[in-house]
Image 1 (cartoon, helix red, strand yellow):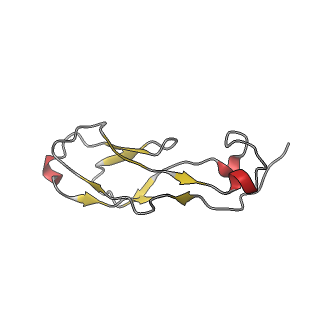
Image 2: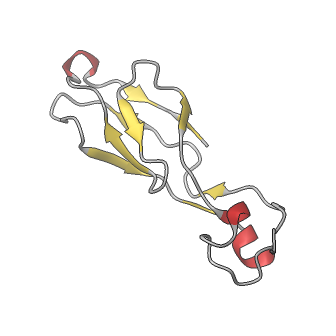
Length: 100
């Protein structure tokens, strides 16, 4: 079985995404879309898609910058949504989550 080696790190289209809290937002509302690409898909995986090339498979996570737990990210799609039940106490604040 072919097991390619990870030669490249993923590159985010917007490395420093910031999200503003607003009292008009509700739990589950989408506030951002993280997007990345990985050069392994073309250079290392020789035409395989990401399902067959584990070193080019992307996953998304919020690693820091959201200590209040206001937001969540879907690990496979990169969609950032409101996780908090009530953003009113945080209205106008901006979170700059560290993404990876």
